[in-house]
Length: 203
Length: 258
Image (cartoon, rainbow over all chains, first blue to last red; front, side, top):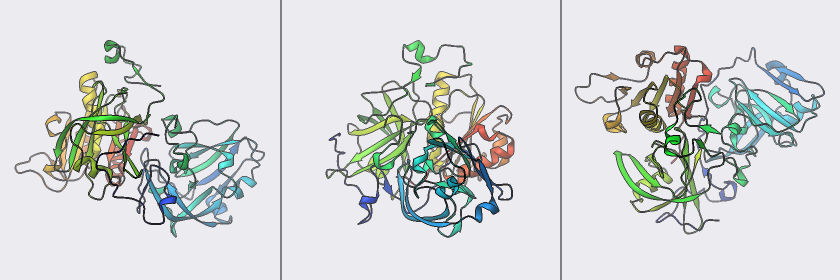
């Protein structure tokens, strides 16, 4: 570890008292909810929206908006961490657990590629999507998820950097091997654990 | 691996001529301690910092570096800043930084750093919002969002003068124009709040007319839009409406950093 000290730096935006242990290394506390997207915001109509799981599965399937909304929803209080350095604490989403969705398709591969309306992709090991650690969410803090934050539905995987929580999610493709998604092909880490500061290639 | 010029360009790249690698390394990014060699006050709240690096690699125009500050008790703060200088400036980079009043890193850079100070950085990073010689290309910049776009322009002028880049640059008021002396005929400037006395150019927010005035053909052009989320959202929707394909519209949004 470098022992470099920045001359005359004291730190003026330290996390609020009691929250230090919840801010991963290199992150800062942010009260707002910044928007980051690689291209124009797609506007997805719930009349034609579907969420599908296919690929290496026993029984591929897809849900319409009505079918999806008939599934059991849960509240997801969480902290989120963006690779651009901000962390937002004590926020909440509402959606359907990936455990519920994956149960119906019988996944056989160990990895998944999430894909989104607008063409975005991001890769995740399947084990990061199970055991109550990932959701497809349609509400943020009691309101329908806005288009700029990924509405009508986005993936939510709060224990990884937030680029893994694909906005405008359209489905998951289950794969036998790990393949890079959009940011993972453009210099960002394949896994993206904020507590290990897995930001870029070779971190 | 990223090339600095497009494959369709047959001429040797400047780096080949200089005997430097044409390819950015796939694994850049260890923390290193650079030295501030020049500071330019661009506008009342924007400064450019020239940083000499012990381990320098050529960046792609549009890439960023991370800056890390460390307090004596070990507390650290990191932020990302776009590179403003051409990758032909061997051995150093220039970062242009907007001073945010509630910022932590930008206020330090502005209020504390002097020439000769050391600063910890790593990069260059991210290979999406980068110019690889696409021509024609429409650059849409709002406020300090012009920084990576100026990197593209500076590099184009030195490395690919035949490439056709046009910049539409939106600022609120005259004292917020960064790189004023470097804006040439490729640039359309618009003032959204206050125009200078006697100004006969564009005023008001970016709209379809101004975007069309830049003269980039939507059928063949690429778009790079950078600025606040509001600016980028407007700019990218205008570009879509003008007929640019969504996959050729790349955006970079400046969230609240500091």
